[in-house]
Length: 213
Image (cartoon, rainbow, N blue to C red):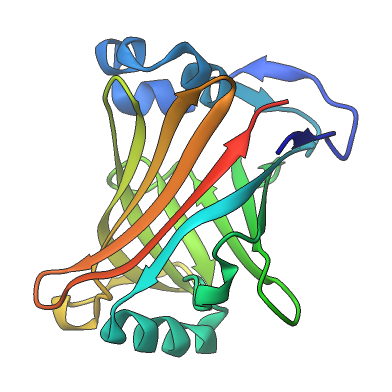
């Protein structure tokens, strides 16, 4: 597993967006490798691409049904268990217009085209950061950290219609989503997605390991 070359020539600039969300103490507690990945901003719309492998993939019955239903709005959740042990690619591109980041995650499957998930992180909203997954659907995130890595937790979900944001009521929320970025040493990190429901427990769990250049 290796980090692929960036798609464009770029300059890495100091980036305080994530450190500002955490505060100096929590930011300083992170592993140096995590601070390096999230403490630099790519200029001129350049991209950085990481290559890895899916090492854990599981669904409950409710989680699988929810993932299939989510395909109607662009497929923001992993939906195919055959991506286990298949290649994974994550590309992060600076959004020069929206002053955020575009994230593209590609997961190989046992057959057919890989699943591609698009999202956009914007440093806005009541929590300071939001993620948009398409069809006007987004979620506000809370960011936390510990000595192993960085965590993004869903605070609430919303539907954006033009300038208006409508917060989704509890009965329309798919569950509590947590994205973890944990440093594994040797220039490796774990990207973990977990969707949990108060009523049904764990719905979806996906882990992938990526390698720095």
